Length: 160
Ligand SMILES: Cc1cc2nc3c(=O)[nH]c(=O)nc-3n(C[C@H](O)[C@H](O)[C@H](O)COP(=O)(O)O)c2cc1C
Image (tube, rainbow, N blue to C red; front, side):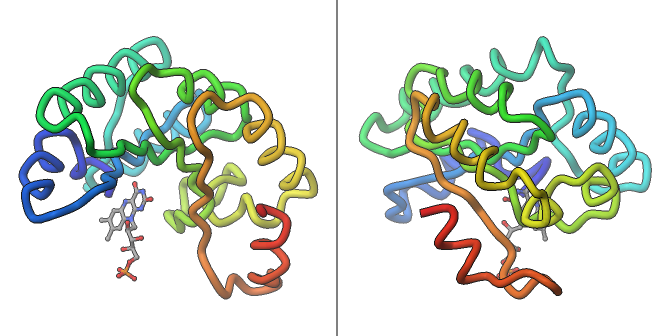
């Protein structure tokens, strides 16, 4: 959850038996970083980093978890309006899974065509394919089910 699930939080829950943990959500490109800023201004928590800070920050968080328990798989949930920053983030050493955020329903994220609005993009399949082809980590796509006008099963097929 944005602003909450950092390495410090995840290290508290790993001892309860989790094999996979997810950091984030993190905003990676200019549009999503600006949207995060607006979300913060109305009082909701967000992880908020500038473009040149975010990859080193995630790397530090991944290392902190792996130092704590190296067998745990680490995922990072990310928002971006373009695939390139997601591909770059997937190259972080030790990051096992990159999770593309296609479910967020905060207005500021929807207004820039991200989060669950991603499911409506004409280039959705191409967007995910580019990441799948070039990612160094395993790719996961977190979707919202039952979005009006979207066939969830069709979306699952496209992702597969
Ligand atoms: C305050 C808040 C912030 C959240 N931030 C994120 C996020 O940044 N990335 C993400 O993948 N999901 C985020 N979520 C969604 C949760 O991870 C989860 O998918 C959602 O709460 C659905 O589960 P539920 O139906 O049991 O509530 C957030 C949820 C809440 C309530």
